Amino acid sequence: MTQHDWNAHYASDELPWDTGRAEPVLVEWLDQSRLAPGRALEIGCGTGTNALWLAAQGFDVLALDLSPLAIERARAKAQRGAVQRIEFRVHDFLVGEPVGSGFQLVFDRGCFHVFDAAQDQARFAQRVAALLAPGGLWLSLIGSTEGAPRESGPPRRSARDILNAVEPELELVSLRSFEFELMPGEAVAPKAWACTSRRRTQPAQPSTR
Image 1 (tube, one colour):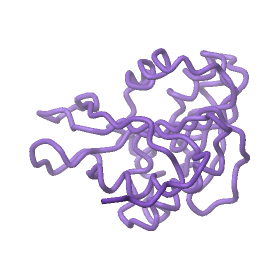
Image 2: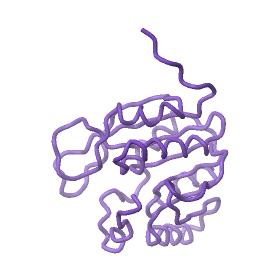
Image 3: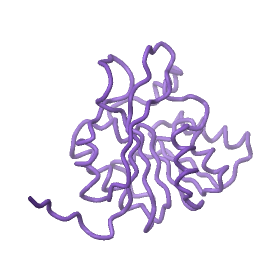
């Protein structure tokens, strides 16, 4: 992720993931989970649409992105809307210093899935686990290996990829399939996973026969 020039996407407005409205899966998930507002972290916040929506729901939000231009735009949005209880920060989540702890919610829409290497995926999950409060939840939206072949769209990860990264550090709460919104120029909406997990209270136990 650190080798990709994300800032160039924002400079050129090449932003197929930036729909300009809160992610429907996040909105539905928060309503169904009945998670009380508290501290929330968004990893890979882009121009801040979802982070601003979470702040409007009563969360104290820290939102991170690698792209200085994305964070600049997100801060401008917050300023125009006079949004309180939100901080936007340029930060590399995988290699940067830890950003705190005690988050009731960690959310990423398509950030975990940009990492190809299993060790990077595992490190991502490990870092999330260290940030969560007891009972806190991580919701990650991840491109899926399901569906027809395609040459564009989000990276594709299998359920096995996800569980191999998540299970050592976190307890899986749910894994369900959905479709990302159809983007301009795409004929079929990309299939994806919505993965919810939480900090372990005890280690995963060895499998038995």
